[in-house]
Image (cartoon, rainbow, N blue to C red; front, top):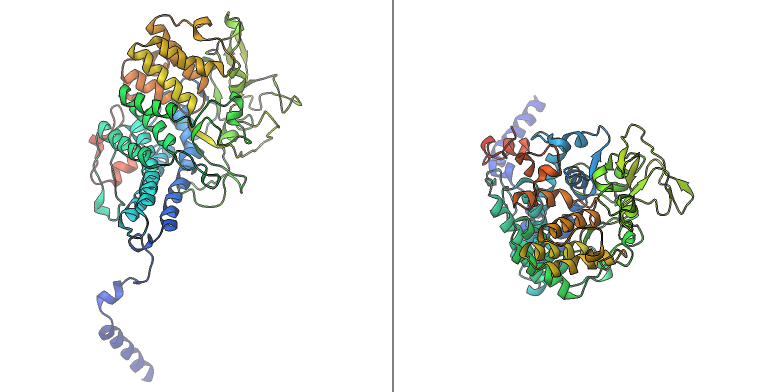
Length: 508
């Protein structure tokens, strides 16, 4: 009886002593974005979380280079890894797991940048100049992400504040609106970021970082005058110069070179972060790029088109472009300071045709063959360069050639060629007398200089879109649907403002 009375009293106490509001009340002392951003350090922590997303596996540490490189004519997939089967040859589908992860991680980066920006706007204690610099950094990261989304998918949903409710989904914007958002963000960043960074903040965006990605974005929309303005500002800043030794750009010991405008930072901490959610959380800080393209896994290999693109004595030139051997290593080459002979560790991988000879080949760029045999598994600490000064010079060369100033175009190209002691275009075996010949020479020069740097696929697509080339001459599977990737099915199902009618042409 006593137990029943106690139980009944307990029920009454619950019934009369606790309202529905009490049951749903949140801890008033909890930390939420609305009350977190009280000082500069707290704002910086939010921005750094966006940088960590950039370094995650679904972005630059893995899917980024697969999704970009395998959609060009210079890379060959050589294994059954699912992403390698779905991307090349026109096989992309809306259900592809890796592309969905890539899309989601880009939006996570945008969400984190927006969280920082909302906090900056609400903060009343931090100096306004400091807030503008931090906002420039957050908008640089958001602008980079929207430029990637516009490049890969065209028009996408645009969010400029932190999404806090399920009814906050946005409809698909147009391609023009997506790039306009990216360009507005990058322009703001260029106006508010510092020219340089001190040692402790190397790897964070600068004015040159923003101008470089802005120039690239304007090339994607074929706004040549605007691109020229942004890119010339980089040259005129006198902050950048070509690295003396081309191969030194891609080694572990030479991060933050004079040529780099922006790079994703890796460090000798832990291993590669296999976290598949795109957060970049955790202490693991190494890159898996060398493993994926190296001889042990060799999931991606150079194509015949790439190795035969370089000027070569075997093709009738008086010289061979030295960048070939800084980009590709062939079976029988020595490496590791001459102590090892390279052989194909994946015999199921097809040989390629190199100037009439069938031979095995792997990528040398971003590998560690210059100093050691990486063995069966090697995660490197080489930073991944997203934009460098040679790219700036070659984009300016393209603009000048397309606008008719052929001498200025040749001058920019020759600056890049002279770094590796190649003859000027006028004295080379490369046809370049007419405007069309020179544009073709610049297209090829970009392929040689920037090989396997996740640039070629976006170049081919913008050139085809604006009538500079016919991409079918470079990709034998080309149809117009290859201009864009499919909107992930997950986005179509989850986003209440998007339906199957919003899917890119040619995809179910």
